[in-house]
Image 1: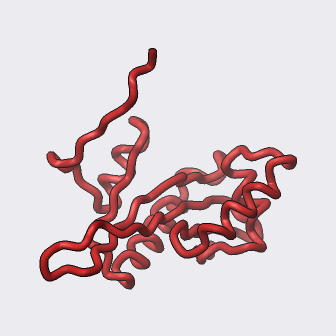
Image 2: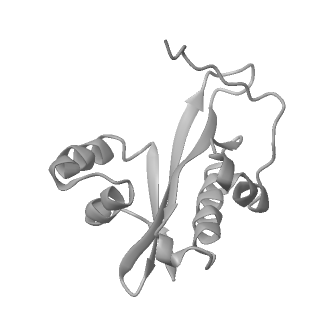
Length: 140
């Protein structure tokens, strides 16, 4: 298995993992190109085929006293093809993302997880944080 930064050549594979149909491939490619500096895709491949992917959003917080640049990350869209799950691919993707976060000196990395994946993120170094709050608009 190889985990690497994904790029333009991986657009179709990344779109497929996200469930994006062929007629939406061009808009997805344009979205990726427009956000290449802030949405960093990582791909896991086996025998030349992308079997998993994860994204790191790199964003900047408002400057603070003595901290003119305050960058953080958010993990998004971690996916591994069903037939390849349970082989450490997700963990390898997370290791690559967290290595990138360290390299960039990010203040912290967040993740918004579904219930089934919480234990996965806890095993990969994340923790619950009492100060992270969520607002959602009314469903009405």
